[in-house]
Length: 251
Ligand code: 9D3
Image 1: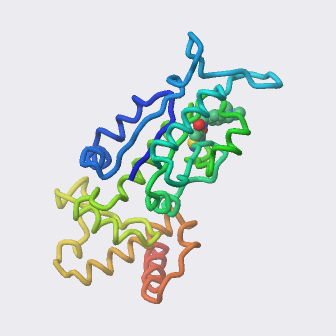
Image 2: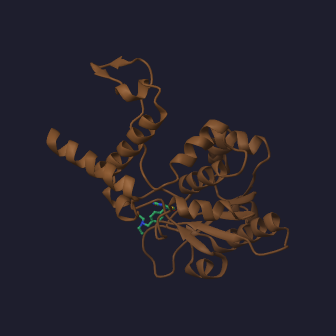
Image 3: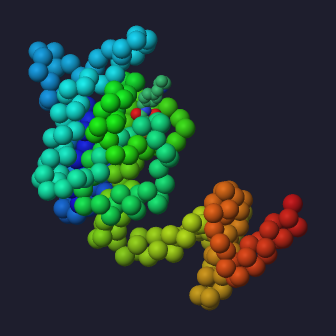
């Protein structure tokens, strides 16, 4: 996969391209990430990348020509002019990113991510150059880079070969829209609390049922909105009902 990133701050992306799972995937060439800095597409001696909004008011916008030139350069480089590639603008006004969007983006051969700074970009650039807007949620960041880095990390993890066997196996069992059941590691006794017996039993079926029940229960407790979106099968309904009854009798 080829990803072009349009940003005034390419150095920030080292956090994704040089560390951990995403860093290894980049190092192994499973994905290439190239940066396009509007600063390098300026023509004036001050290399100006911001401009005043028409109508006045506080704050600046990204200067049009360097931004558009860098988006076009990124687009041309990743697709080698062969075909259209998706251009995503990280924006607080976009729909909130979720795993379904990540899998959709991860299946593209190329992406261009556009990071805004200041108060954003001219609305006509949005119309002409941008295919989709994506937000991380309803809180204010100083620019699009951290959002692009989150998207990048999530997309790169999805490239075949980027996860070790252990990680992918884990991922598989939780691609089901539920939160994970509680997990425990050594020591067996910590802060006066014991690891649940069943996890020490070696009984794989009992462990599967316990994990499913507690996965449903954790989702019910912490993210009931996720349960609304699911169609639980018979076993899941019964296990959730058990969890709820036991929880209520403990309260
Ligand atoms: C305080 C400024 N806001 C009122 C006009 C507008 C605004 C402009 C630019 C708010 C944030 C930003 C910079 N944010 C992003 O570029 C951004 C973002 C975010 O702030 N929150 C969640 N997701 C994203 S994706 C890109």
